[in-house]
Length: 371
Ligand SMILES: *Cc1c(COP(=O)(O)O)cnc(C)c1O
Image 1 (cartoon, rainbow, N blue to C red):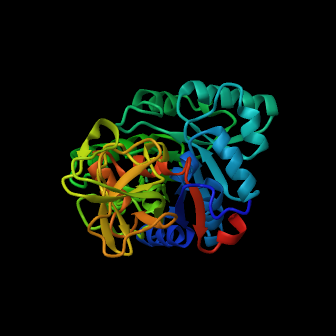
Image 2 (image 1 turned 45 degrees about the vertical axis):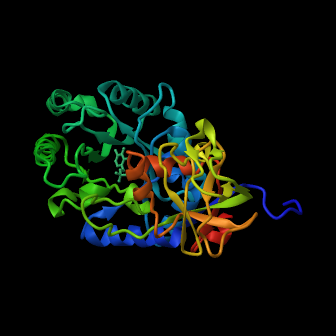
Image 3 (image 1 turned 30 degrees about the horizontal axis):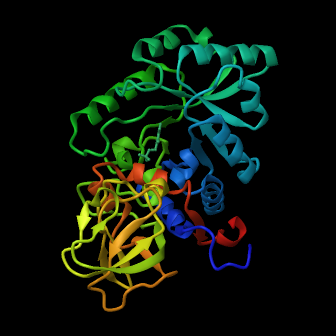
């Protein structure tokens, strides 16, 4: 650290204890099912090594990432022991990298299955995989006809031990959606003709569809990080992130001053403004015209969100922030889901964009070690 007060503009605070609490809550909901953790995309932007370590310490032993490189990084943090599965499958020729870091491939196609069969033959021993089947999302996994082909020809699994049969729900966030039951029926039908193995079906929202959706392994991501898994009801999860932004400058402007790009806002009275160090390059959506909070007071945005800054109207504040103060941007009064609603997107997208540029600080059990 240099001698200056602060280097990064704004701060993303990640509450590892809240993430662990959310994992425990989902585990409890799952009854007898094992609760894994989906930590792809750098744990939705919150730091996969820190999140995985905190969850492993709490007893989680199953992790899902999307890419091989994410798996390699998480393996370094976790050491041997826990299972790490790679959802997007095996890049051609990467089998040995999976094996040397004990990463489990999620096999999504007959081609990938053939590659793992060949690898098992070459090694002269069995290999372990997870098998994804497409129960009605048309994204990844074996189609029903391919599942039948595997069921009809056991030779297709020569040397390949399927440790988990999994599928993914397309409409789990809409509890009454008819696709949920259609997918569940398709999943059961396909799993039943494959060699017996533990099964996994539910993402965050899927867990809230009820016990029939739990199977053996739960796969929550977003709910761990505080995104509401039941969008039409009150959020049952603990908030795990907050964002605060530094005030760079304050100024006084006279009536009719144009403010920011395009002069989208024009002062309708003599105004006090504060420019904060957060913009769309930090993950704040350009179309989310909202407010900051300072000691509980609301400070509305004035004009467009810029790449690296936003201008706030502090005219009505009795206790306005001054240069160097931090204002709250994501806080109990303004959650990730609120921002998503304003930006016409989902909490997942807001969350995954925050981590790239903001300074991350960790609270909770592993905060010190992770820092
Ligand atoms: C991302 C993902 C999950 C986690 O989904 P959430 O909605 O974040 O809980 C689970 N399974 C698969 C296959 C995924 O791609």
